[in-house]
Image 1 (cartoon, helix red, strand yellow):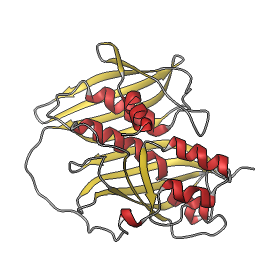
Image 2 (cartoon, helix red, strand yellow):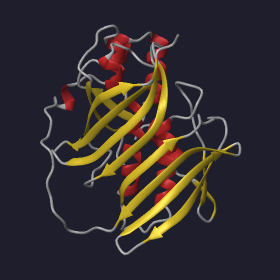
Image 3 (cartoon, rainbow, N blue to C red):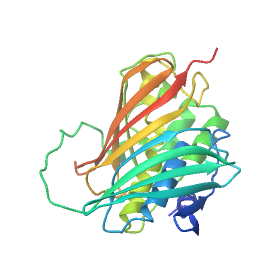
Length: 286
């Protein structure tokens, strides 16, 4: 396990300051605000700590309300909405400086047998044949920008199946992107931890496909500005975030200064593990 992953796990290990109230800290590398994947993962940690361990998360729906301040702690308050025989529902509000910055609803389910089917697995290259981020980023980005992006993603081994948007600026492409990812090190056998880490990573690249459709390089090169608006995930089958996961992403539409990304996360042996949908602000600077 590298130091960056240890630091990320520390961020997810929230301090409990009262019953159903937790406090987290942040780090900011790329922009002077809290990374959306971090606050979503921390909120899911807070919710999960109030739920029996035999009820894994099966869905979350979240709204990003304000830009988070990375220099201030975030307080997460959990409301125990429902504890049913099969499902448990939690609502989490993240607060900074007296204002809500994030809202999450999450549902957890006791294991049960049921009908089984899934979509066909998409074609994708073997992750071991793809360049690492340390190999790819310096080819397409200025040195300082590449270094900051590498630092921001240092806890995760994230490999693009094709050239990312900042590598083909000015060349519109099909609005589809694939990345393989896994953590840089083995994790404990805690299903909530693996779900929270996938939540963290899911916010890194999902809107890339919006950028590809318009030949934009994105936040790394400054030809668009944007932020996550809402985020939804459904966890279909167990998975490990320390084993290769394929993040297959596409954008069906963009309009009104907003872009929509939708994706599926697959295990390397072909099981559909997660479905993700996110809308974000995507604006061209004037």
